[in-house]
Length: 441
Length: 116
Image (cartoon, rainbow over all chains, first blue to last red; front, side, top):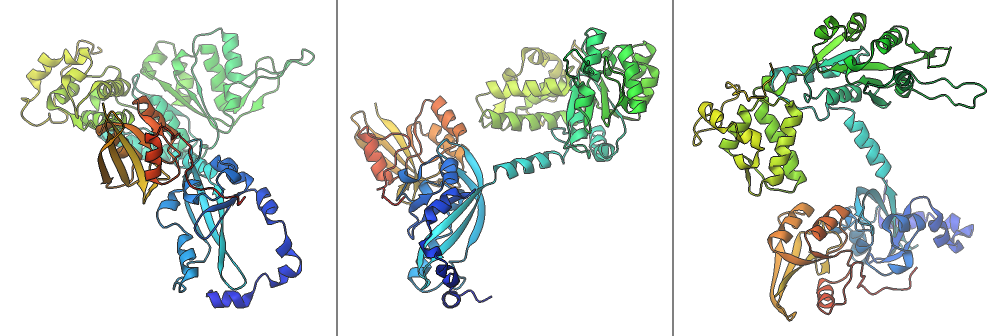
């Protein structure tokens, strides 16, 4: 389409509309009521007018910024470099630019408002020309993209394995099969010592599953009277005549989503029996009710102990164990993740150095020897807390032994005997670990 | 005792955005408020975090800038800086006003018309 200045004049698009009296319309009132932000700026990009939506978005009233360059009102990321309409203003004064600088254009970016809040926006700049094609002013239309960006972030979060990281073969295998397991609707049993990341894995399974947009409900079957636990898990039916409304249990809250039972063996055997029936019949009868309620819930259960031993000890019903054990994912303890220790240390150091705004680049060889020798009875949780502490107290660019907790520093004599000399390279992955006095078993 | 004042720049104006500033003006004044040193620094790239580091590294006591995010504002306030943000105007005028004790956060120094 011919979009030159001359052709725009000949098209005279508003000629018919002018006959209707539009040229006499109360334009500011119309603009003021539009449901998106509108600013009118002059040829020199000075603010002439802002509508109500833009006043709310920027925090400024139209009259207090009249005449102020719009880059100081919008404070858009697009204002400082290649301002969309400056080219048009210049082009209209001089010779027409080859690529028609007066064409409307959109760009996305951010603005920082009066309340120091960064807002994602889309700016569309539309030049307003007179009948002779002279540039009169520019209409800046600003759309708030906050809701879209939040949705995008939420959807992006559903895709990956979340905060689970690992490079050892066991973790790589786990991360490789995670999408397939998440995609199925099978019941999953997660095993692994405390601090290995069972909760994170359960959440990652949910986020990667087709149920990701529904609820993820975590249940911790802490010791409580059985009747209360029944209500907590399976809900309570409303009693007619007693003015009591039905109360949804955790299973009802997880409808269409995922229910995560964080320590299955803590659940009393009676509730384990009800859970088994629920898994078989896909229905639950709320406490005090008679009619079963259909449920569509995926169950992910976890235990920090050996499930076979729990069955033998009579703490976990065997039939429930077999029902839950459709897919079993085991998270290895850190002491068995040899080559992962250094990776996890570096990974968490990056996170906490950024959080504390410190330029900590790495670990000294002595600190690394101590950390590699430690057996982490608290697993990844303990390792993460240790790095957080070290990054917090470190004032230089390297984590030194004195930045480590005392019980790790106490390992030094033992570590020194197995670690290479301080002036050589860091210890190789998978070297024999010096066990601390806290070693289990 | 003197102090360092940093003004983020966009051409001759106070930069409308702290996080997008690629030039800064660093002015040292003595105890009597007289300017003793003036430096214009060009930054490798725009980054609010790097700018915070520069500010702390140069022991800046006063920051004059345009819009900035709450996180950086509170961080620098926590580091005991006097932060005059949301200032709109020419950098030289903002500095002069500050030295006269007449500059506040949110000041608009550009002439304002009766357009609206």
